[in-house]
Image (cartoon, helix red, strand yellow):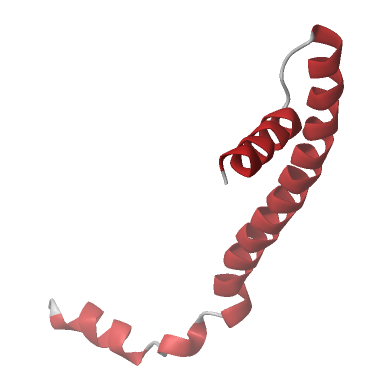
Length: 78
């Protein structure tokens, strides 16, 4: 009696599941990852100039100032 369900499953072809149904969730995930990367790059590009302006208003030292100081210090030591 147990062999009947097993035999029925053996008769079902493995390719009965459409490939589009299996591949679609992966494509949606990859598309979401791509959109997230694009949004992150745009966000980072907008944050840097905003931070530079705010640093100048508050009198904080900016990364460009640090880099210029280090470059000048290396020339003096050399």
